Image (tube, rainbow, N blue to C red; front, side):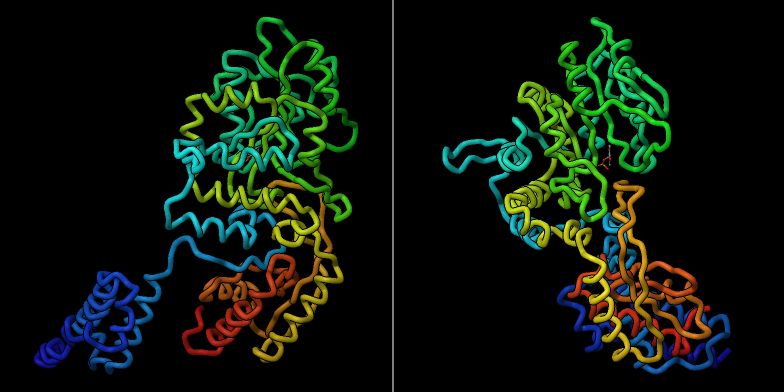
Length: 473
Ligand SMILES: *Cc1c(COP(=O)(O)O)cnc(C)c1O
């Protein structure tokens, strides 16, 4: 008992530990509470272990401080953290969909910590509209008459239906009643908007006559076409093309809405991606088109609505416009992204989503070899191989298209791939990779060259953790 009391007396005091110079280093950028909590927790746990008789000797100061430093470092990790996407899925929904271009990210940073012209007209020195910030650029790039931006495409669908067809029927093909990401379902959005869904046709076939028969002078508010972004119906199928829908709309004087989802500006067929483009959609002439900002457009999360001024004006005045409006950072990123589209060739290189999708097998093979050479040199205890693989666009786009890609396979005898994969996620900058045939694949399509050093650091971390005593079980 006397021994326990003497041990307890030897536990350092909180204030004393706080003065250690190895902790002083944290003070300039860490809230004091975080440091104090880490010290207290460590000292409390020592006290408990002594009382439980598990500790017969107070660990030395260095060990104590090093434990506290790890605890502070752990506490400082943010919940929203940067990761390296080594999955080869370009628009990885769980990893934040599109990576912004460098220029778009810089534009966000510029307005983030300063005042801006969000709703201010500098020329006239008066109040302006945030919708004007991107409208001209969107119009220029898409060729549309008017444009408006909301939080995402789900919000866009909602406001379009509420403004154009509240209390009326909206005719949609049964083959196009999509669900995206678990919570966006056309029938549910429709009922929330106050419009009534009028389903026509069958799952695999819908004909112009189906829309004609559904038309009712009193009740029909709009014909709506929904792009089946994340699935395709194959086999004996028939649907009504957008131009034919526009014809039907003209015939019955009913507005036509096209929910296209992807927001693709440049044709990607030559890269093996079969998705319609916004320009083709505009050329077909529906009254309103809506799409996401962070899918194939490669911008920030947003819902972009383009079309005739008459309808866009209705939406701008709608009460939901305020609820769904975007902030200055979204607008900054979007304005720059659309600006970049004014030079399409350059956009293919500067907008990450387009650059990643258009990377050829040869380019990716070279890139994988380069990463492998660096890994061989930095972490020779692992085995590596360049492996061909199939990548996906992701984000609910081009569900049936696979892109030919390349990965660095990484393995070590006696170590399960699951363990390597898990440890890569625990690295300081986590690497999210996939497993194929008991090997971890670092797919280089979605890893930028300037991230190679961080991938190497992560693999070093895995090696150290496996080799060290602290290896997990
Ligand atoms: C992705 C998608 C949506 C939902 O868009 P979010 O931007 O994720 O809200 C709606 N409709 C279609 C056709 C889509 O592809």
